[in-house]
Length: 116
Picture (cartoon, rainbow, N blue to C red):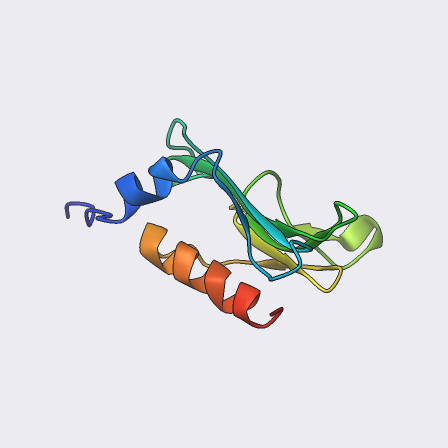
């Protein structure tokens, strides 16, 4: 079966290195980093990405990225997710089910909307 084409991929790639202030006081800044990489089990969509909102102190408020595996539990029985896609919010890291580029961007902005 052929893999479904991700029509939003090129649009997401154009966001690489873009920065946007997202509130009236310039206290919250959205920063995008998106690169094409080899397709691997950890990054099956062939992207390495970071979509993040930083506050005025430079602290991450919310973010979606695939920089590392997500751990579940603690101690020697701790489990690790196979894929790297995850979401950071309220000092929690949760696995993120990457569907396609457009959904990633939409999910990111939904989280941003909760902040402003």
